[in-house]
Image (cartoon, rainbow, N blue to C red; front, side, top):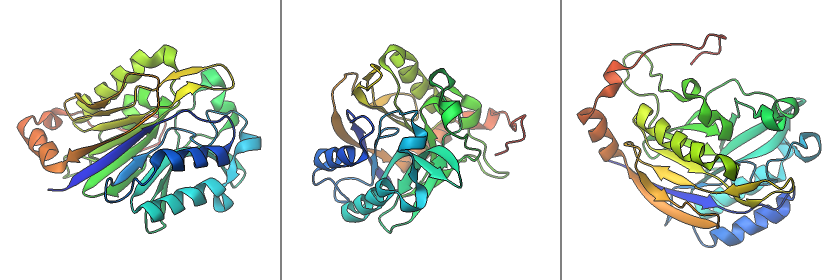
Length: 271
């Protein structure tokens, strides 16, 4: 069965300076590439920090220098690289997770749940579609930060005749230090209830608004146990492997999915 090597990049971010952040990330990643990893995961809004200056900082998707940088990094390193950025498209602003493949193709997911306590819902448009990307035999459900608090949005909803919709949940974040306990618990809860591994990548440092970020980037296995757990406020780059055979064996041995509830969303946004 296939193995997926995943690299978590926990880093400090330069406020509203995409070029500086891209340079910093290139230096941080060094020679890391396809010989070492299959997937590099960057934090939410890795180019700017969690800015609400969407009108000033969002880049047009079609001409985005940051998207071009992601594509170049994926091509040169020979692996998928992903993280969210502020983009504008057709007059709407999105906190968009971009999944860049080595062949130049892209998948993207627009953040569904906008953090109203920071006014994000007033500065960005809500996404309406769940997005699953595929890599080395793993179906990966994409999510961004505040989405993690909403289990219905992230719940397994397999098609008729299937047992699982996805095999890995990925969440990128700018999750402040005062709420680090919910971050850690929710990552584990999403893994346990969905019988799948979870990647959570958060930033560290302090932003221009004085908010501190503790990191706590984690790779959680299908039982809710940590494969990568760095409860500290310093940057790091860590790689670990996920084994599809182990995942399938656990799902067969502990078939809680057989007793799962089936449902749709009341507002008409279906799965």
